[in-house]
Length: 153
Image 1: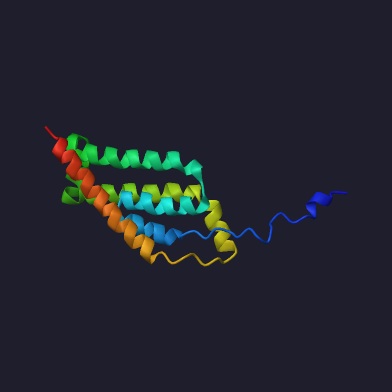
Image 2: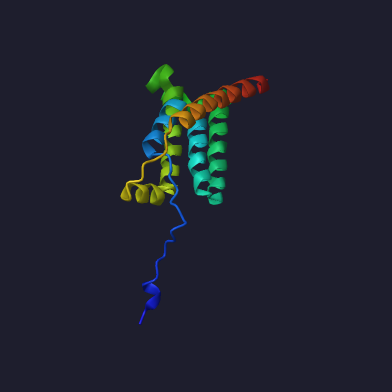
């Protein structure tokens, strides 16, 4: 018969990885911006030991740099949005990019988040990493804006 079906597939020594919750990822993305969302999602990828997420992180970083570059050097791209949103355009675009990054990483880690919810695993406390990622993300965005402004002719 099929004896291999009766052998356990999980060992007692392997512990499941506890990820930071998607709610905390959403809040970090909403309040911290796109760089903070990348940093915080990187913590979950690091906890999972997923090197396959590196290209997604690099693409996200390129999008953040491209976003800052486009805001400073290609403002004509956003004329229609500026007419619609006014002075809140930059904040709205930043928040939209941040939440898109959060959604992409949720899609990448969805299976792990769902299994944690299924087994009622309590996620680790997100306070300290979230605050650090928000502060670092803010610093990265300010640094990018300053760097590109210095490069302007």
